[in-house]
Image (cartoon, rainbow, N blue to C red; front, side, top):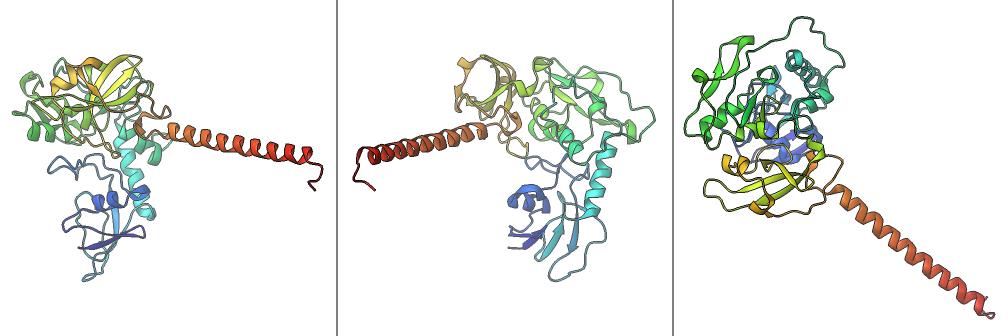
Length: 339
């Protein structure tokens, strides 16, 4: 198996593995961001350029560095390859520039956007963005179109990652939408005002890295960090039936697919599970009701609960030690022969 070194950390990976997936196998801060790549969608990636890395050594056979930065979601690993990501000032500068380009036409909708708190562009902008834009021209504007009663399209927020198009191509029986026009007027739209209502079309909401495609049934109901995620399942003949319920009090506000730590869907779910079953009685709950209240992004990690358990255990140990010390002191006072 080829061996690759990324930011000084080495790993052996199967033949054909990309640099991005090799970095994910290592984990940690060296994993490049990916706004368009999705491991479960074939031919995805290569659009946004946020995952650019520097290959300082091509391979053992040809150690010459690659002349330009390469997209890690497309470039496969070769034996002996050495890659620089966060350790390269060139990569950090390029990523900051790409982030600035992505934000040029992006509206400041975060205070009203339902994706806030789960938005990958928010995370990217926080890490690599600038405090102030240098863009002084008029931002892009698009005519609002209605694509159905389940999904809301905000084209001004779209970064053209093509994930939703891949979902429609690979999961739905027929695609009703796509990218029309070219250049800076390119946009996601339906063909002849068709409605996007295929049975697996709701997965477009989950794969969208920004707030361009949102759940109409959840629209303006609550901030995501005020809701409580709970894993659940049901028997479904259309999909796996494994979902994540988002509670506010005793009410299920929305149903989504489960996601991994990179924000990718673990199992696709059908529209019936997503939109038609929003009662606790419809599901078998799998996870505890108490989760980390600091961030719903790290749902099911229960970091706060673990911290409280550790603190409680330390207090009990301290109290036990204190009681033993008092008992020993009392014994010494009562026994005058004890020196």
